[in-house]
Length: 485
Image (tube, rainbow, N blue to C red):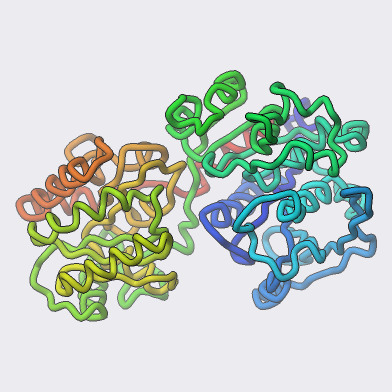
């Protein structure tokens, strides 16, 4: 193990269902795609294990990566049958990546619409295959770093699987909670088919209100539990923010730690971003004005000096759309313009489109996701809206700060760790303290007062945000220290 000898280069295998640039559903992919390469720069021998979902191997080849097929197959026993996979490894690039090819991953979206004993099997296979990697690849990690509920079966197997718990593994495990709202609930009996022993099916193991909770098992079994911001680490240990696991997390508080996610600052850089109509920096914001004008023109709006609020992301309850929609009439009355890009719950998509029809010169939307439009929204806005009900970390506010677009954000989770009220030391945005339309409008009102009446203060807040270091260069060493502990 690497705990005793600090001079030894520690070896870490990250296991995840998704990672950019190969496959992505949400922010988890961004984190897993950028954290391991940053850890490698800090001296760790990091590698990544990913499922070869449809198109993933082609995406790797399109990136110019050479793929080497590992001669030995990956054999895992599930439901009394041998499940076999093929392992591919990149032989170049900044980070060694293993791709696990199997019928389990073919013809499927990454996450099932409904989790059940059958739809969970791709994640079980991925998790158990990680425990076979040592023999198949002849590379032996010290740390297995598992990301969210989809890799929880790996940690569960080390503690309760009838076979794997008898193997003489010396692994330590880190389990990162990216979003506690998704825990992996299954019927308890279904885990017997994985080879999980009966002593797991108690309140001290996986049992949760008569069923099984995969995330609960990972929290119990992991050597360390991290989450994606310090404030979120505190929130998930409360009854209100714990989503049913607050008490469990409090009982394991000695191994729970919040480490703020980093941003890929090479990709998200307004000075070099190729998707912007003009580039700019904190020293010269001329290009940002051009980005704003280009966005207005694209939306069919004339420049009339009104403040432009933008939003990029999922149109769902978590993101605060239930308090944003009732606030829109007052925003229009106050002279705001609002552009929202994203998709999500049908009722929110429909309501936004109806608002666009009612106030065509003030409200506009793009339903779906387009990378170029997202970049232009981050750069072209004066303010960026994030009225989230909860937010484990959030990357959108980090991007908007880097692009000089002041966040109007709820004081919760990672938003509270990165957005600071205008007028306070390091003030770079405007905080929503009360989760209600009135609370949102209060923050918007303060933002408008600065926009109209304090141009110098607005500019200083922009510079403060753009100068902030939210890169992985700051967060990766914290993970490295955790591994060594």
